[in-house]
Image (cartoon, rainbow, N blue to C red; front, side, top):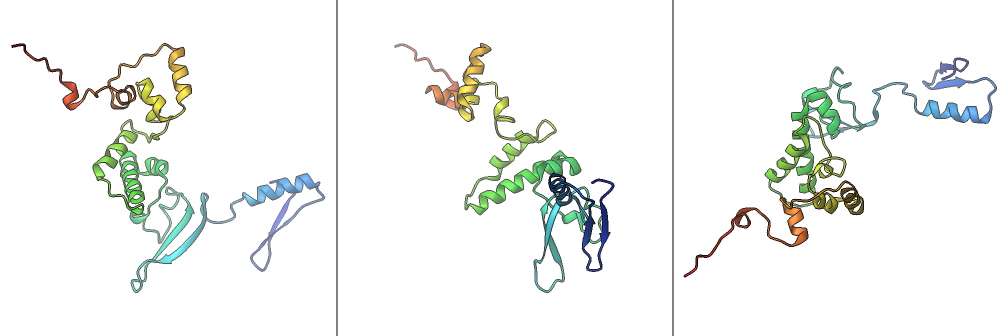
Length: 204
């Protein structure tokens, strides 16, 4: 904000901004800066709702729009051991990759349960392990796990099919058809389980 802009606190608790003669464009720019200015509170948290979870226990829960896990750690009255967020990247940054893995599992299980789907937790755990096995959080999409697959057909089956096939042709990539997806695409048995065994019948 410009140094010639004067800010004072009025008796009603409002902040009043006095500006010298400025053009309309400068005033619009100043308005945008003021709207993005944090006057009080924690940066990253836009608003909060206080709610009593259980009647009679005298305990209140604070639900916020936005997340600032690192900044709420030292606030008096906040029980950090019970503070949660759905910002997986922030959890990994503040609490470590294992906490982020657990948060991914919890979020996925909660989402599936809300949709009425009963999925074995081991399937979800496998996905969470794959997303965090390299020490950071990887997305499922083409910029994460799916984009890192060795198989050309498997990458093409997920997203941007034409781009993946063109890039593979340009660099002369080959697909050895060792995975499940690529074998299903070409319509041949998967080399797993009974499909991994070759039987030869003996004559007479």
